[in-house]
Image (tube, rainbow, N blue to C red; front, side, top):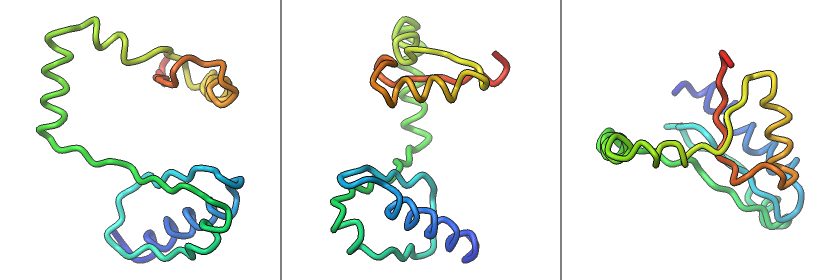
Length: 111
């Protein structure tokens, strides 16, 4: 990853720490090979939780596909709602307000 892109991603996480409410959650979605520099003090003062995304291996995906292939009903339980792009914002707002199932939302860009 280029240093410039890394700096942008770092700025994004730092901004999120500044913007999140006290005891809020910041999720880092991305894969950066450059050091990320944030000031931990602000996150500590606000008691912010920072979580990073998980990377899965090809073997993980193959195992998941095998399980789903053996039990198609399982695949249907993995998604509680499917919406089109036009409805995505409202659907996420429902989840945020605690009205939208378990949060397993699939967005169908053609639906």
